[in-house]
Length: 331
Ligand SMILES: [Zn+2]
Ligand SMILES: [Zn+2]
Image (cartoon, rainbow, N blue to C red):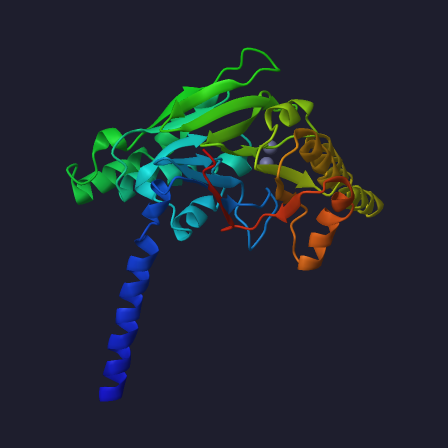
């Protein structure tokens, strides 16, 4: 009996420790002068037990920016110890469900975490509709939490997000989204028709840079705006495999599935197309994300790397949730 009690107490202490550790954000990231990039969702819209949908967290100069917040990604933000109370902006590349599904969770959880100001959500025209829709869906949750914890703990003014529409002057030029605390964010057009406009983002901090493609077919405009970046995070679709999948579906009489599979071929880049863009832009490291089909089992990883090293001589990375890059300032 005594042994059982001791075991229970030890178990409880371990659980308490685990809860505190999980809530302990890596706040050193905020002020160590580095540009931190954490992959918080590297999957696609297709079901994947090991990867959340699109999300990249960038931490630099006290700014914490989430680029897309796909389903399941909030959990990855939290478990990878991103300082959630300091989340200062969300950048949406476009409004496909696999890029916006966790927006309500991101707004709510940063508020619970202690975010003191409304959360700015930047995106292409139409972002107001997205922000307003999530606000409506989560409005009752806000009331429950204020009633339960009091407004002194959870200020109502901070419960909301504010939409910030980013307009491009034309298809070729980038627009500055914001430039604060040394972190400069720019948006530019990528190719994801019929999703128009769809944006890629570039984040520059102290001579280091990361470019996030969003979803795009091979895009010369992306290559232009990714010039010289340290990291290019690019969506990839294994086209040869998807063409085979479409043919299989057709053979088995599933015309609907065959059409859906063929449709998506037109608006994503293949790994070798992304490699060509990386070459054109002369980036240091190419990071593959948003892999379609999902990389289960791991043998499928080879599909994404075949032929890529022949084209791009830099480092090539297949992103995983939780992967982190720390780029020390150069100036
Ligand atoms: Zn998309
Ligand atoms: Zn997508």
